[in-house]
Length: 125
Image (tube, rainbow, N blue to C red):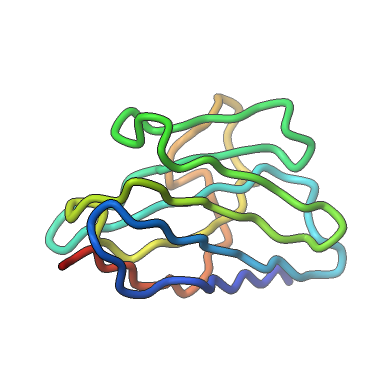
């Protein structure tokens, strides 16, 4: 069974930065793409970024505009999301997930079958 646990969320001022981490555990840890999603209050969940562990495939949502690079550490089985130049509209619960369904890239939330509990990120002055 795969488990994912996010950390690093919190309160940040506009223009600031946060680094989220997602620790992935399992026996074995699936060699499957990983992604970060977010769900703002009252809105649908959206895909922020996705990446294969080796980094040969990467995807970023249009609204990220290059501000949120995703990275993976295969040794630590951890996925990171560096959030820079943050805006109030980035306020959301952020989730990491592993994708083991579907064949298109990056797919959608239905293709990601294991999820972490989420971490709250609030951007406010």
